[in-house]
Length: 253
Image (cartoon, rainbow, N blue to C red; front, side, top):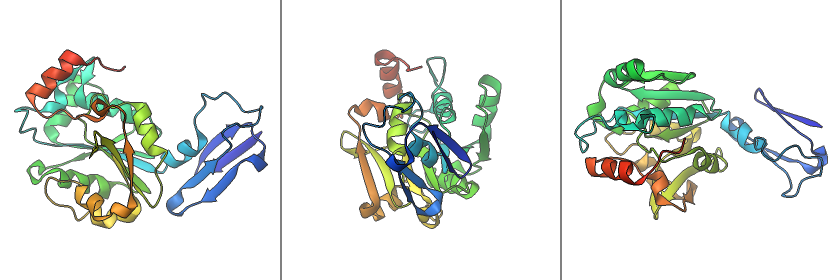
């Protein structure tokens, strides 16, 4: 039995130590890999992928939830879907993964609604955006400033079909060097991962494009991950899109 420890997290698996390859990386990341066909003594395959688990522990999930929902005409994040709201589903998804930090950037009104109607999952820190009219970059800056992690994954809070398997696929590619960008139908989408080496640039963003400018300025650093079904990454911006969601999709609980 081998016990592997990195930055306070212990992973246990039954593999001969000589079969496991380690590579230390900057910013506290440790990459661990093992053969596709491991030793017969390997514990149940459904156990957590160790390399993923160690990588995730250094990453902050930052939920940007202070938009004005101009095209929807009302706060779209509070619209119901399944047994929760659009935002509630995003928060539950983030809460299901072992992030080092979970940060919700929102308005006082949205936070008040959550406190009255849904339980904010444990482990979240809340940052209030008092100037949502400044655009998404204001929330991005606030969330990034609040984090001390080695990388940041930014969620938008309005992707109700996004699920855990998709986020895991993105996190498996996270590294101290690369921006990880999911793509749907050939177009970039969210959630996007940025390592901390881009922190200074992220903190300089202004307007409503969020981290897009940083991503576009560093194409050599981007890892593009194409999703087989574009609906998984769809965000809900208009009444027509919301009506289609209710009509055509079932929540994945």
